[in-house]
Image 1 (cartoon, one colour):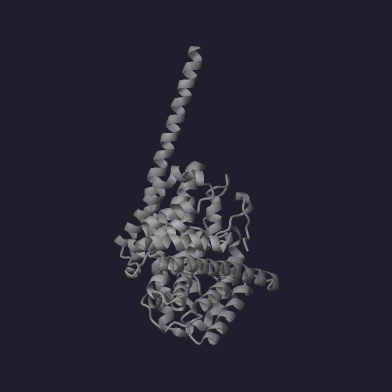
Image 2: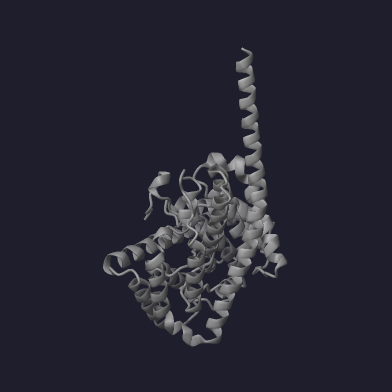
Length: 419
């Protein structure tokens, strides 16, 4: 009897020691991931800003879109098979027992993103940042022989750190990482670490000189019933826009995969298509991130073309679907803001308000992260619009269906191609 009690006590002691060690690893790791995420985000953002400035100073670079596409295609054809899943691979690695994020993902996504931006492909940044920070985090975790469960938690922290450090929305970064979790039961155990990593990454990025783009506060929000119907209808519209974006992106990708057998030729042809679109549109405004169009929409300017959000959607779908490297978030921000401006004109509503609502709601519908996007609205535009943010984000998600820009692999029990 005494031996049994002694064995039980020893087992309990070992279990307590293991849990304490795991907690310490996650606590310290979350802080270190935040620091690394802030530094990596700042460096990555600096390189992309250099790419955009270089393209602006040498406007002939856009004519090299097919050449840039070929280089990106060759790079990924030769070295990119293990990282083809992109951000979805990172999310899967946090749940699959033997999952990991390949070390090569960081340098490849970094170089591919800079190359895509310098020639003007319509791609974003957040997907690349998430993959970079997650790749470095998982590589260090494996080298230090951190247990699988702690590595999984640190990968979630890496997602939060990349988001908070790159966009300057630390609270939204924590929510974003949690809402992308494919095992909701983990929320309670990891939420303190995700928010800590995001906030630390944000502070580190600020400390090294990153200046985040800050739109103005929205002051003309009305909550009377005569305006609520607009939020509901706008949410439906934004959800449909997000659904079209996801479906179109998958459609373009399938077309290129089926019709162009040699993978490096896909972004080359995609670059030619983007140049043709530029000629049809008669402007270069839809190349690159196009965040200047958001400023125009938020000021209520009348110089935006009625089909501007459609143009940006097509530019982005062809760029990403053909194989250029980047993310979807910033293009979706632009598409949402432009769509919101047009909705406001059609319903005689406030253009700045609905541009802001579209900015958060279209991304919410495409990523299925309503609370993170409502918090983005708060951190970018202020608390006054919170009820409207929640209404349009939730309605947009319902209207968009199951289609998402972050599909899971079969290993996590969900479809890989939601379109």
